[in-house]
Image 1 (cartoon, rainbow, N blue to C red):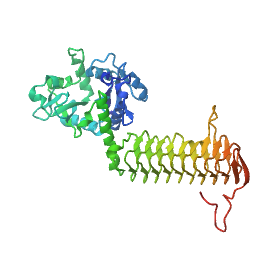
Image 2 (image 1 turned 90 degrees about the horizontal axis):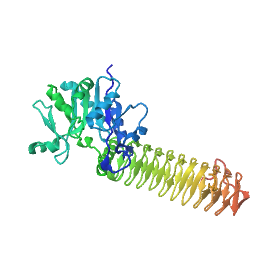
Image 3 (image 1 turned 60 degrees about the vertical axis):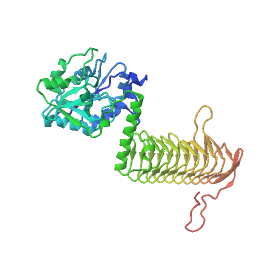
Image 4 (image 1 turned 30 degrees about the vertical axis):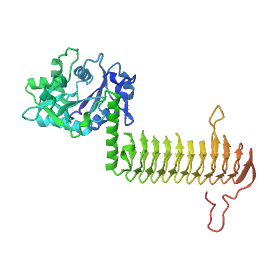
Length: 462
């Protein structure tokens, strides 16, 4: 079995034009660092990444898993020197390697596979990626020979008038035979600035009678590198457009796609509708048949099937099937809504579980609580969970009825089938099936919330 390809990911650039203390390759697009997208792409192509960092970008090491070798280029002396450093960390691997920049998040796995296949098809030790990106750019121009291979790359600043008008440019991704690379790389010489350029491999190949294959991508933005905040925004927009299109091809509807940014790790099932102005971030998962938005924000949230979320913010929350949320609700981390829960206008839930069929509407807050099944939480209900030192829990039993403007001072328990009157301030536990009223609330009589109503009947549901 042939050895899996390597992928030399060059991430040692200083990124000075970003004007940032953060290494360039750690700036996010579609919710993940630039470098993460490149590594995911080469891995999807079946390659093993080797990342080249500099002292300035070494903070990126913390975002790499332990299986990825890191080579330090100190000082950075050009792309050719970066590949030399990467080869030193390759542990004598054979076969082929991809070479790609760590600031090109739009590279596709199939493009790497195509570059690899070109080496065999053309009998070439080197294949590069090109694109039709117009003439108003600083990319090197591709000059082809009669066989359709690369004759040479002309740097834009050195190009003649006719060469500058060539529509095809080098996008900076390569596949290379490792044995040939080890033999050829030492022959590259620094330029007047002391840098060694990777593109000089083309001239070395041609001088020795070798072919240099080229793949012209049908998606030229693939090679889009990021050097400024403007280019960062452009890459983010392009990647998010690709992400949305992938979801739509898989059966997801967007009513206004351009208004809905979706992060790379978001998972959406078929037959979901995403309404305008909706933002989906992190590792959000949405089940089939749900409708999200308009103007909803979901961050690291799991939504079951058949749910409805409208004009609300959900972060670190879980919704089982057939849950409705909003408008204007806020689910904070640890919120868990079981099947059929309804959370209405201006409801807020934090670190609390609302069990099956519970209803909570109108300006209520439930934090650090366990709310039973089929509970009705009246308007203005608040769990007073923080005593100034610690967060305390509130427990409400199944089939309870919490009257409007009830204050539940935790730690406190309201029993099954119990009722609190409007404006009650509950400071002591309320037994099962009792009615509590007043400030502070006291139990005054038994509730009939769970009393059977006749043959075959059951307790009334809120």
